[in-house]
Image (cartoon, rainbow, N blue to C red; front, side):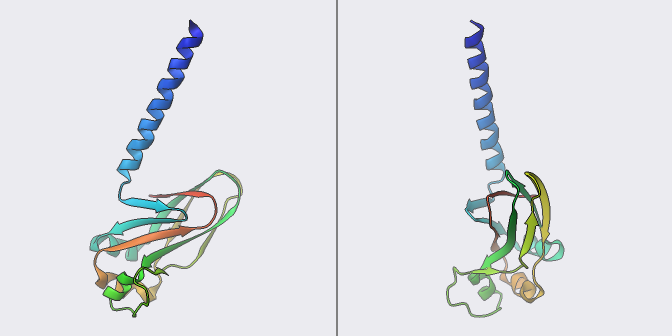
Length: 144
């Protein structure tokens, strides 16, 4: 009888865990992911905040390794901002320096990425943009 009760407790725990993960995924619905890129849509106010303070990211790794993280926007955003003509409007243009993050052991690290000065004016003029994060390695990346 007790063995059966443990199964139901375990099943209830798994269901609650899945519901919790679904809730947190819907809370972060403003971003979408397709490995190794994570995308977020920013309004003009979000772009101003990005330029002023950078983007703070929480990186989680299950293994010890080195990874690279960069911000990108699509060429059409820079085109709207008057930066430069882009051959393909869907081309990813990296707007931050390449940042190396070293995980000495599995765990969490925080990193702040800043926009290169060459792209700041164009991004401000572009209005609403889709920014993204490129990361190499087997990481889960979370916007903070």
